[in-house]
Image 1: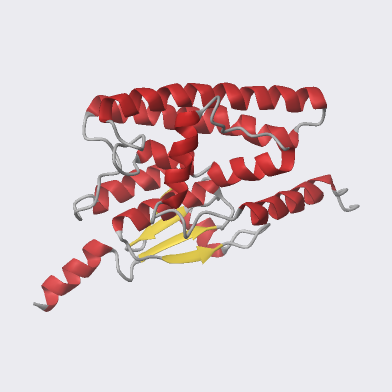
Image 2: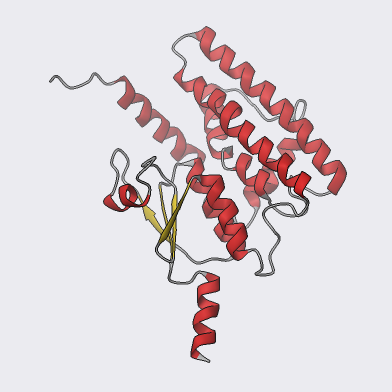
Amino acid sequence: MAAAAAAAAAAAGEGEVKLLGAWASPFVLRPRIALNMKGVKYEFLEETFGSKSELLLRSNPVYKKIPVLIHAGKPVSESMIIVQYIHDVWGDNGTTPILPAHPYDRAVARFWAVYIDDKWFPSLAGISRAETEEGKGEAVSQVFAGLQLLEEAFQKCSSSNGKGFFGGEDIGYLDIALGSYLGWLKATEKMTGIDFLDQAKTPLLLGWADRFCSHAAVREVMPETDRLVEFAKLLRSKSAAPSPAK
């Protein structure tokens, strides 16, 4: 009986799951949402901004970046790899699968997740980093163009599954990939006065974003917009500060 209880606890991840991260990181938000979806209890170890803990350097010696999931003493790095790991390890606990069951649907979800990270989010981040109005305008245009592509992708997904998320009736892999950036998208809207999601251009994504942020697995861990705005100002001030003399 004791052995069975221990096995059940291990399967649920109790007492052996840790996540190294930071509250403002959209990449850290991804495994937090996935763990919440699967009902996995975990210890969140907050990294200090501007420094790297010994545990982080030891757990991710290649990239030295967050997030890192530590499960049973073994580290797993890279946000979407961690999400897939959570799906693989805790996929049989009776909740909705994170990854689609069909191989083609999985491939499509992974394709768009890579697009979001490689193309779309750099454009969003480029708005605040732009040094000229021309550069800012180009980045804004790229964000809008990307959202239009994702609006079309959502339309295809919803027309096939008739549900409110990319993943169907519940949050899935692609929902997590894009939804993790909604906090920063809202913060950018507030800082620029531009509505990137609206009823006229992206009605499907607008409704999806509301549903995503209201989801039980998301609403307690999604960063507040005003707090992200203040954090963005802090980052900007630090990047603009002159380097100390040598």
